[in-house]
Image (cartoon, rainbow, N blue to C red):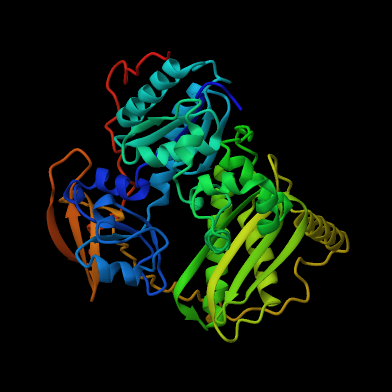
Amino acid sequence: MRTAPTILHLDMDAFFASAEQASKPSLRGKAVVVGGLGPRGVVSTCSYEARVFGVHSAMPMAQARRLAPNAAYLVPRFGLYRQISEQVMGLLRELSPLVEPLSLDEAFVDLEAGGTAWDEASALLAGKRLRDDIRAVTGLTGSVGLAACKMLAKIASEQAKPDGLVLIEPGTERALLAPMPVRILPGVGPATGDHLRRGGINTVGEIAEAGEDELVRLLGKAHGLALYAMALAHDERPVVAERDTKSVSVEDTYDVDIHDRVRVRMEVQRLADRCVQRLRGAQLSGRTIVLKVRRYDFSTLTRSETLRGPTDDPAVVREAAARLLEAVDTTGGVRLLGVGVTGLADYTQEDLFAQAQAQAQAEAEAQAAADGEPEGLGAEPVAAEEAVEEPEPVVERQWRAGHDVRHVEFGHGWVQGSGLGRVTVRFETPDSAPGRVKTFRVDDPGLEGAEPLPLVAPPVGEGLRRSPRP
């Protein structure tokens, strides 16, 4: 293990909720809960003000509403969160080429590999400047942990929350870990924690005292030896740079089971289009189309089809997903659907089946012309009445709580809630004072969806000056 605290762990503070508070002045300092708002929804993130009431991530949304009935409940805006995450990860890559993202709001950085830090003083300076840069660029706060290994750096960032920095000095690790509960160690979940507790082990210090043999007896060789090493503050895991994307997928969980087969097909088509949008956004293509169906009884089925070559054609992905759906029984109802693409490549190949069909059609037309026959011979004429196109069905606009809108008269705002044919909007921007509230009909022609505004206004002239790197 290293002798200097040059491993950095960054964890953005209540990321989704903090981003919502930063973009909505009326919610700053108030309880905010972000997640699915339906009967089956769960909490993705909540603000520190909401945590006072006992709300936490992964809690059923219905329980959160009982604990904090006056909190603001919002649907996630993942597009905004990804934009902010890209800004933060860009700042981390300025520190080192070895950045290991764990999620949108969390990552390890090897400061030594980037020449940014080599001892305690330089590591501390790098951590402080990183926090300043994150605040300046995104308007949000992040907590930083610095240590000689990944495990301790993550523990340090937890101690630093919210909006802080903690450096664990080399040589003090075992004394720091000893009184901590065993659940603080990576790989110790509820089941392992209960097993250790039944063996009389409740703290990290007691794991170290128990010794290798006892840990192996309790947990098996691999897990026991790994846990004993971590209790002694030994963690040799390197920071691994971001790995290549293995798959691109989207999925939706429905508040009410879908029983209508036509609706299921429509949802699969919509998910296929969203999946292709992500695929193209990453400038990728893929060979294998995957369909995921979770039925009413929670049984989950996965079906896949591999094409002759990689594609990012939405029609090809839709057709493959539709074929996969035909092999799945959805009679009892569907609670979740997903479409994904694997076998990724950085190039596309036209659909070989479509090419073959086009070539065959061209040859047939050429042969027909040579024989003097009119094109389309043998086809049944279509009656004029049958050729009239039916009007497209009217799709009712959905106004999701927390999402951005714009009104021709009142400007930019966000949806506070909707129902009974009405939508309530608060008109404010990240750099304005708390705004006024207006209510409209859901079909108001002056109201439309909008893209999120940046949390920090773009710099003018020379741009934002960041602190020089150490």
